[in-house]
Image (cartoon, rainbow, N blue to C red):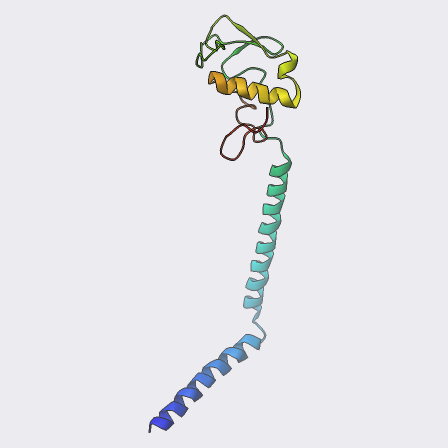
Length: 149
């Protein structure tokens, strides 16, 4: 009796596997084929779009514009700024919150690639936010430390 049950179980398993294999290799119906092709086309399109966005985002300069002066400063000439609101903090030799002091960023120290780093150092020292400087991915490391300057 037990032997016949074991034979029946193995035959039953064989029939299940046989049915699965037959269905696997049976040509799909029109509806199944349409769904499969649609899913493949959608997957390929999404992969291409994601790749395009990734490469476009990688080549773009972030932020795209660099402000002439730190945020909320008033420009009084080319790369000359006044902190009329007294923003920031006073540290060491730098008087950052003086409302009448003209900060001249047109000198050679603040020009070129190194100049951006110097501007970042000045902004960090004074506690200023500067669009295009304090959020520049090239100047900041992953954890926010300055890597250029």
